[in-house]
Image 1: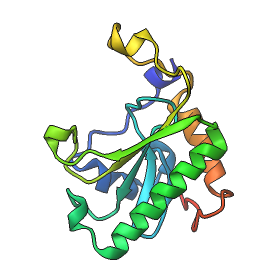
Image 2: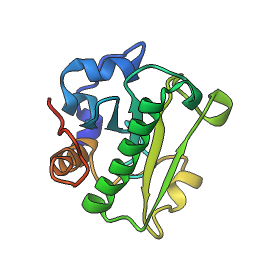
Image 3: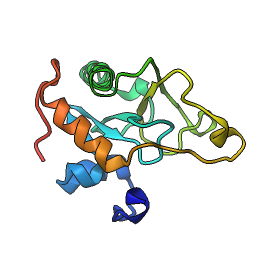
Image 4: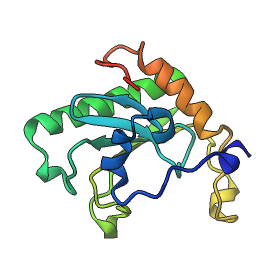
Length: 161
């Protein structure tokens, strides 16, 4: 109910470039920023803690990243995996990028997914009920991850907002 009743972020034309400029990481669900990329909770997660890793510069494919951007993005992805392991203790992870709409890319801005997985985490709901069940509200997950991001080794700079 908290998620359903929570205030919504205004509709943005380019969410992955506009969200960091809101200067409100909690509303934007940004849990960590690096020099060239950031981590945010997926608003439509497959599992609790589902993070997106996103370059600050708008590009649509990994081939468009500079070497520095690629290194920063991968370091941020690695940090996100470490953060989820520390805070949520999953049994495994799905990590990947959807490149292009046919591959499932719903927003034409490069972003990767870090999905924590637990043994037995999928039941009949997503398959038969065509719905997802999450045991924790996004804001509660954000608070845990954003707080822990400041103390997990390899964080670099903590969220500033």
